[in-house]
Image (cartoon, rainbow, N blue to C red):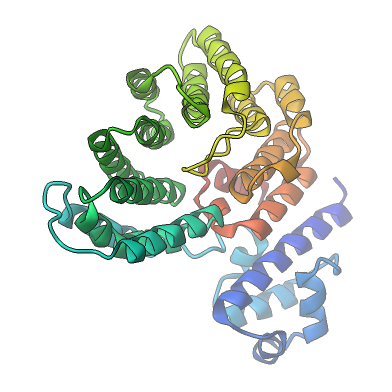
Amino acid sequence: MTSTEQLTVTARMIGVRIRRLRGERGWTLRHLAERSGVDSSTISRLENGRRQTATASVVDRLAAALGCAPADLLGSADPVPPPSPGDGRDLLTSLIATSLDENGGHADAGTVAAAVRQVRRLRTRCRYREVLRAAAEAMPLAHAGFGSSSSAAVQLVMLCFDAAMAARATGDTAIAWIAAQRAQDAAERSGETYLVLGAAFARAHVALAYRANARVLHIVGAAEVSPRDAREAALTGMLRLVAAQSSARLPGGAERRDRELQAAHLLLPAAAGAPDPFALHFTEANIWLWRLGISLEEGDIPAAEQAARRIRSNRLPLTRRTSYYVDLARLAALAGDDLTARAWLARAEQQAPQYLAGNRGAQALLRRLA
């Protein structure tokens, strides 16, 4: 990689960070220019990727104006503010203060449904810290209605599921486990198989983050059913994928890994047209994305390249598309192409900064590339 190429990628990543930090503060270009003494046209070209270099003086002045360190803009530190302690703490407090056995209050069904929909919208947009805050507020309402109707049970399971997934994404894995367990308890009381499968995925996905691989396989095995409809087939397929990744991490697990991946592929026809109540997107593209991640963990570049070629990013939702960009960065770094790795990380950060901030693999790679 030439020094010019290095500067080009660095300037592009700086621009992404400047635009986001400026937006978080609600500042116009002109306001940042006045505070920093850097011409607004220079800032604009950096933010839009049209300027290929950024001098140390420009970086220093912009960092001072934005109230961060130059390293934050250069990428040697995380430019996304870490989750506020209150984000996860409020959710934990809400989970502790509520119980499936102590609902008895009153909550308007429409209000609860609207709150749960908002939490889902935030999660699918990778706005995880906002999910934690919104879920903390909605949790008492959803518990108050639990037991009054089947739809109330659905709302509580969905809320706890989204809270678990968001807490996992921000690194609050202990809170994620508690929320996932609450989803499981509510799902089992509801008697709805698809809710039990979705909650099992949440628990398995959190256990995967802990690398508790034997526990993951136990959760998947306990939830195993013969799918009766497309929705159950899709959720069973997602459980097969998380089992495949856990199997790959265990000594001698390659055979089961391949068996689980094959089982997931075979479930695709049965899952065709299925509703997606948990926004997990069981599709062929997503299966190949899981294959890509597994191959990267194993350091198998040819298998990872094969999986990457099978994926069309326009068929992936934002959460999975950002994961795809991070995996492409990991693949490029594994192949020794740091320039391309930086470019993919910059693209991921531009699309979903909170996802990148909570992704341990991406953060480790950013530190190595800095």
